[in-house]
Image 1 (cartoon, rainbow, N blue to C red):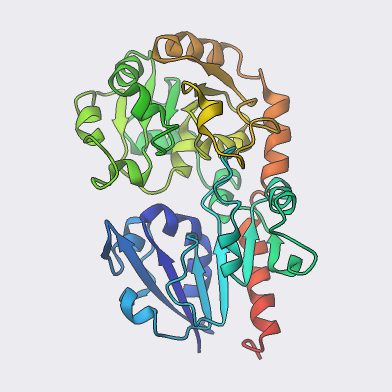
Image 2: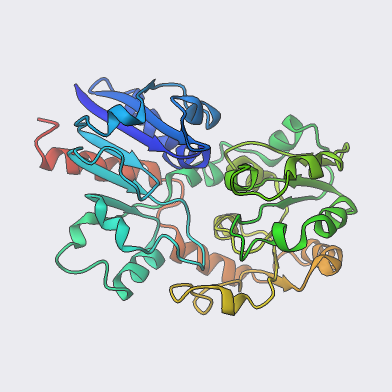
Length: 353
């Protein structure tokens, strides 16, 4: 039996791994375990259950640190089971901030890259070299397969949320970064503007924005005051069904903006004051940045921007399609490619013999 440990610090990390975890869970050669931290405490299987993964047994983090697993799988750079034989990393996402492009990636034996853009970033920063290139395998992003494989239908998702599919739908999904989050910079004014939109509004916040250790206010409480037959605050780990339901995305510096380009639908970016001064050297505003949508100064410009996006949905389409092709390899087939890369690595170690 090949022992597999998945580790996540929050539900969004488990969502990144979920398609692969289900492959492990349904393959008789593997025994799947999960370890998790949430709000700084050992969370057992709660993080995975919140992400819709039930097919694993929980292992306390302290025990995982001393155990030797055959496979260690995580979307976090920290490695809680360093004695594992094959350590596999998936990335949380790809944004112009390029937080994922870090030397800490080399703690892993196998890095599953989202696409050509990410590979170039690792190469340009001297992290991916000729000496370690075999550790970097471009597979795509497994969590996004469901966005393009036909398994999610816009109207079905809206119906489950008790929203009218006949109405235009906007999804607000900001980053959680204190420096670059439109939620932190625009807060209540933005919420009020969203509530005035003539169609459906879905609000999906990052796990960290709901973590009382990191958030300065209770955002759930704010958006609860706006709940209506056309307004939903969705406290769920997986943004992918909500992307499928949206006609327009409103975001800022979040990786979900790149993910939404796979659908070739309009994007509105909320600008952050002095953004260029706040991003670090590894941020890349030149290659793709926010070119896939309209950039607005603040909440007062939101409703006109949404009306224009809905009236002219094909604007920026060529850029969106080019971005998606560069950032995401093999959309719809990333899980299979990732699975093949992992099993090849295990076979090279003699674990599948």
